[in-house]
Image (tube, rainbow, N blue to C red):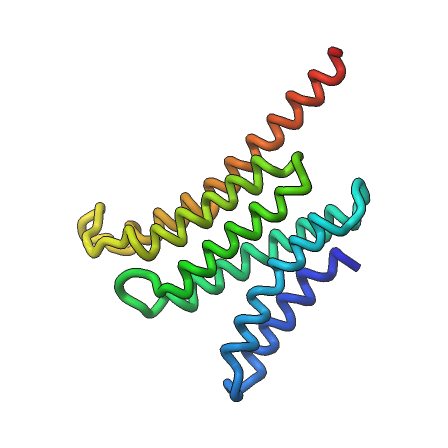
Length: 179
Protein backbone atom coordinates (compact mmCIF):
# COMPACT_ATOMS: atom_id res chain seq x y z
CA UNK A 1 0.00 0.00 0.00
CA UNK A 2 2.72 2.50 0.95
CA UNK A 3 4.56 1.96 -2.32
CA UNK A 4 1.50 3.29 -4.16
CA UNK A 5 1.03 6.35 -1.93
CA UNK A 6 3.46 8.68 -3.76
CA UNK A 7 1.98 7.65 -7.11
CA UNK A 8 -1.55 8.29 -5.85
CA UNK A 9 -0.53 11.66 -4.38
CA UNK A 10 1.10 12.73 -7.64
CA UNK A 11 -1.85 11.46 -9.73
CA UNK A 12 -4.33 13.39 -7.57
CA UNK A 13 -2.18 16.50 -7.82
CA UNK A 14 -1.85 16.26 -11.62
CA UNK A 15 -5.52 15.39 -11.97
CA UNK A 16 -6.52 18.47 -10.02
CA UNK A 17 -4.17 20.68 -12.03
CA UNK A 18 -5.08 19.40 -15.49
CA UNK A 19 -8.72 18.42 -15.11
CA UNK A 20 -10.02 21.43 -13.23
CA UNK A 21 -10.59 24.77 -14.90
CA UNK A 22 -9.39 26.81 -11.95
CA UNK A 23 -12.61 26.72 -9.92
CA UNK A 24 -12.97 28.82 -6.76
CA UNK A 25 -10.50 27.65 -4.16
CA UNK A 26 -8.08 26.28 -6.76
CA UNK A 27 -5.01 27.77 -5.09
CA UNK A 28 -6.11 26.53 -1.67
CA UNK A 29 -6.52 22.95 -2.89
CA UNK A 30 -3.13 23.07 -4.62
CA UNK A 31 -1.52 24.42 -1.44
CA UNK A 32 -3.11 21.64 0.62
CA UNK A 33 -1.98 18.98 -1.86
CA UNK A 34 1.56 20.36 -1.88
CA UNK A 35 1.69 20.40 1.92
CA UNK A 36 0.46 16.80 2.44
CA UNK A 37 3.95 15.22 2.41
CA UNK A 38 4.90 17.16 5.57
CA UNK A 39 2.44 15.49 7.99
CA UNK A 40 3.00 12.23 6.12
CA UNK A 41 6.75 12.36 6.92
CA UNK A 42 6.08 13.33 10.53
CA UNK A 43 3.62 10.47 10.92
CA UNK A 44 6.10 8.00 9.40
CA UNK A 45 8.84 9.28 11.71
CA UNK A 46 6.89 9.52 14.94
CA UNK A 47 4.11 6.92 14.78
CA UNK A 48 5.04 4.02 12.53
CA UNK A 49 6.74 1.00 14.13
CA UNK A 50 10.37 0.26 13.29
CA UNK A 51 12.03 -1.74 11.79
CA UNK A 52 9.37 -2.71 9.26
CA UNK A 53 9.59 -2.48 5.47
CA UNK A 54 6.31 -0.57 5.14
CA UNK A 55 7.63 2.09 7.53
CA UNK A 56 10.69 2.65 5.35
CA UNK A 57 8.57 2.71 2.20
CA UNK A 58 6.22 5.27 3.78
CA UNK A 59 9.17 7.41 4.84
CA UNK A 60 10.80 7.23 1.40
CA UNK A 61 7.48 8.05 -0.27
CA UNK A 62 7.01 11.07 1.95
CA UNK A 63 10.53 12.28 1.19
CA UNK A 64 10.07 11.81 -2.56
CA UNK A 65 6.66 13.49 -2.54
CA UNK A 66 8.02 16.34 -0.42
CA UNK A 67 10.90 16.93 -2.83
CA UNK A 68 8.47 16.99 -5.76
CA UNK A 69 6.15 19.36 -3.86
CA UNK A 70 8.99 21.78 -3.07
CA UNK A 71 10.19 21.64 -6.67
CA UNK A 72 6.67 22.37 -7.96
CA UNK A 73 6.27 25.22 -5.46
CA UNK A 74 9.56 26.67 -6.70
CA UNK A 75 8.50 26.40 -10.33
CA UNK A 76 5.11 27.97 -9.64
CA UNK A 77 6.62 30.88 -7.74
CA UNK A 78 9.77 31.50 -9.75
CA UNK A 79 9.26 30.50 -13.38
CA UNK A 80 7.56 33.69 -14.57
CA UNK A 81 8.76 36.07 -11.86
CA UNK A 82 11.76 38.32 -12.08
CA UNK A 83 13.55 39.35 -8.93
CA UNK A 84 13.71 37.71 -5.55
CA UNK A 85 11.46 34.84 -4.56
CA UNK A 86 8.12 35.72 -3.00
CA UNK A 87 7.79 35.55 0.78
CA UNK A 88 5.41 32.60 0.53
CA UNK A 89 8.16 30.48 -1.07
CA UNK A 90 10.62 31.45 1.66
CA UNK A 91 8.05 30.47 4.29
CA UNK A 92 7.44 27.14 2.51
CA UNK A 93 11.15 26.28 2.58
CA UNK A 94 11.54 27.33 6.21
CA UNK A 95 8.48 25.23 7.11
CA UNK A 96 10.03 22.26 5.28
CA UNK A 97 13.22 22.76 7.32
CA UNK A 98 11.15 22.68 10.52
CA UNK A 99 9.48 19.45 9.36
CA UNK A 100 12.89 17.84 8.77
CA UNK A 101 14.07 18.85 12.24
CA UNK A 102 10.86 17.51 13.81
CA UNK A 103 11.09 14.27 11.81
CA UNK A 104 14.70 13.73 12.90
CA UNK A 105 13.92 14.17 16.59
CA UNK A 106 12.71 10.60 17.31
CA UNK A 107 15.13 9.02 14.82
CA UNK A 108 18.78 9.42 15.83
CA UNK A 109 19.70 7.37 12.77
CA UNK A 110 18.31 10.07 10.48
CA UNK A 111 19.66 13.21 12.13
CA UNK A 112 22.57 13.82 9.77
CA UNK A 113 20.54 13.24 6.59
CA UNK A 114 17.50 15.20 7.76
CA UNK A 115 19.73 17.92 9.17
CA UNK A 116 21.40 18.34 5.78
CA UNK A 117 17.98 18.51 4.12
CA UNK A 118 16.86 21.11 6.67
CA UNK A 119 20.01 23.13 6.01
CA UNK A 120 19.31 22.96 2.26
CA UNK A 121 15.78 24.24 2.85
CA UNK A 122 17.03 27.14 4.99
CA UNK A 123 19.68 28.07 2.41
CA UNK A 124 17.15 27.98 -0.40
CA UNK A 125 14.44 29.79 1.53
CA UNK A 126 16.71 32.62 2.53
CA UNK A 127 18.92 32.48 -0.56
CA UNK A 128 16.17 32.74 -3.14
CA UNK A 129 14.61 35.65 -1.26
CA UNK A 130 17.39 37.62 0.42
CA UNK A 131 20.55 36.77 -1.50
CA UNK A 132 19.02 37.43 -4.90
CA UNK A 133 21.22 39.48 -7.20
CA UNK A 134 20.34 40.80 -10.62
CA UNK A 135 23.92 40.40 -11.78
CA UNK A 136 25.12 37.21 -13.37
CA UNK A 137 28.35 35.49 -12.44
CA UNK A 138 28.47 34.14 -15.98
CA UNK A 139 28.10 37.03 -18.45
CA UNK A 140 25.50 36.30 -21.10
CA UNK A 141 24.16 33.22 -19.33
CA UNK A 142 21.83 34.66 -16.70
CA UNK A 143 19.88 31.48 -15.98
CA UNK A 144 22.94 29.67 -14.58
CA UNK A 145 23.27 32.04 -11.64
CA UNK A 146 19.78 31.25 -10.35
CA UNK A 147 19.78 27.56 -11.21
CA UNK A 148 23.22 26.88 -9.78
CA UNK A 149 22.19 27.84 -6.24
CA UNK A 150 19.02 25.83 -6.62
CA UNK A 151 20.72 22.68 -7.89
CA UNK A 152 23.56 22.70 -5.35
CA UNK A 153 21.31 23.39 -2.38
CA UNK A 154 18.23 21.39 -3.45
CA UNK A 155 20.09 18.28 -4.61
CA UNK A 156 23.65 18.57 -3.33
CA UNK A 157 23.16 19.11 0.40
CA UNK A 158 20.56 16.33 0.89
CA UNK A 159 22.75 13.95 -1.15
CA UNK A 160 25.76 14.88 0.98
CA UNK A 161 23.67 14.36 4.12
CA UNK A 162 22.54 10.93 2.93
CA UNK A 163 26.13 9.95 2.15
CA UNK A 164 27.33 11.16 5.56
CA UNK A 165 24.46 9.29 7.24
CA UNK A 166 25.44 6.06 5.47
CA UNK A 167 29.10 6.54 6.46
CA UNK A 168 28.04 7.18 10.07
CA UNK A 169 25.91 4.03 10.04
CA UNK A 170 28.80 1.96 8.63
CA UNK A 171 31.16 3.40 11.25
CA UNK A 172 28.81 2.62 14.13
CA UNK A 173 28.17 -0.84 12.73
CA UNK A 174 31.89 -1.63 12.52
CA UNK A 175 32.35 -0.29 16.07
CA UNK A 176 29.63 -2.63 17.35
CA UNK A 177 31.29 -5.63 15.71
CA UNK A 178 34.73 -4.82 17.12
CA UNK A 179 33.41 -4.36 20.66
